[in-house]
Image (cartoon, rainbow, N blue to C red; front, side, top):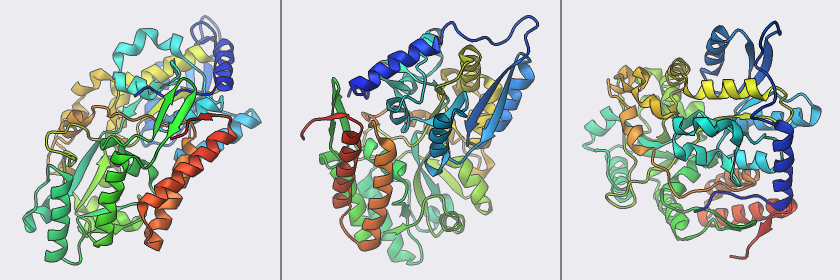
Length: 432
């Protein structure tokens, strides 16, 4: 599948931004007797503050002021949009891959293709695909979000379960556990988390978006996407899966006490789990995601982000220097792996001690060995109005679970809302 394109008027805006940015030559990181260049950087992930401080200690001519904001979809992106309008936007921002095309379409981010020419070989090509729109690059990759199965080793051993190779076997284990221990569920369905659901859909090859030229096609109920909704619908209907709010106190309590025995989740979830279910240390392990068919290599992905330059940044040379350093300096990545549990996009990161040491929380398992084999990309492209798409997905799945209405109907409504948002922005849409 081709990567997302954008409408003609947005392409014109991108060209203007590129001319404005002059990324390859404008700005200065400071030199001679000039005062230090000061940059502002907004983000939310653990470890970003410490990694930024490390950069400042080693780069006296550039000072980066880091501000912690709410996670993007929980208010951070709205704050960025307001700041751009007010003229108070930061120079740099943490930008989730799923939201990057939307902000590009709005003209919020600066194209930096000229500034990354010599650095492309330092990062995974799949990460560059995630940071690119219409042939332009809009951020230095930081991490990827390959999916795996987090599971309670103690619960699995007690009830004679094992990490299964296929989703069909996983469903059979869900039924077996419910029969043996009615107070437990094998896993959980989090309807309010749109990115978790898209990760499951991506693994199955159920891409929702395609584009030819400047014309988009949107289909949230194709055969592979329908396979995913039908699978989880069956588990819900049979009470084989518990429903929880994503990342809620209730969810982490269930993960800590073993009421929930497994969860498909991305690499960075390891950091959340260790902090929010500390009492279960030594009980958790990580295994490859169940597949739709034996031997299938796809794992899906949830999250991952880039460091992007924001419209109005007037020190692009220094900003690019920092963004590149942040995503591939070994000490920076050690901090981010340790604090946030990320899986770095830099290709040299595989040799980082933090990715190769046994983790006591996971019974001394080297968990990143699992994510290393799971990082292959899937045939998935994000749409141009993911803010609206994700909001609709969260609302409609939550409503479907609460009202016991079909998930497939919810996905059709998501398509309708997405198409409405695209038309309101002048984006061309093909008939399905």
